[in-house]
Image (tube, rainbow, N blue to C red; front, side, top):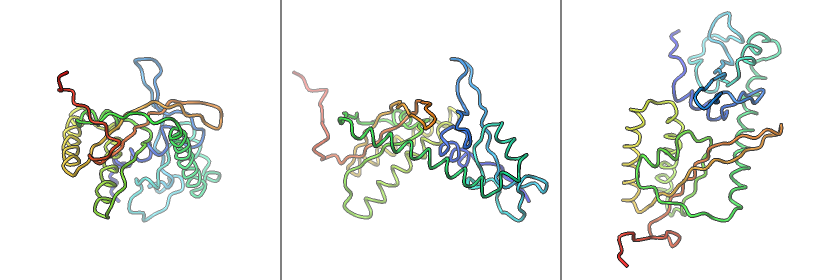
Length: 244
């Protein structure tokens, strides 16, 4: 059997769904020691090993490197689950993985819903791909909204745009500078297409404090993206070129 290894998309998927934290002890996995130094204690761990003598091995699996077979852990817990295989069965690890990812999602949802109760803010229109990439890059969560759609075609288009934007954000932290420039150019074309179809995109990035069950707090980057029709009365148009 030939193994392709963990793809960038799969790696992005498990890190984003786990929110940069160990699925067992919830410790932050990638952070800064100082203003200059960074360290990473996170490891992408296989629930079912591809090796014949590996932990929880099962034969005849087409791909061992898919997201469903990977759990994000700190180094200590990676060692523990692979040594104590009688305790950490496949079923238990899948339960731990699902519970942690649900905990991340619920924590984000609570923060986002709490934010919705606040007074509305003015959002600036996004006019360049570079600006848009800066907003979605390295975000742990996305707050999205859009005007009411009137038909299935519009629903597919708007849904596709919002999905593309979150995908760009999730991938941005795993690519080199050259690729980021290309992504900015692609997002610039996306904005042009959006405007041609009668929409504007508004957005911002904010750091929001998250509080966990153990009492710890952490600052998470949340991107807000709102698609509005050009003729929406909520859109305030300002002519900066108008002379007094």
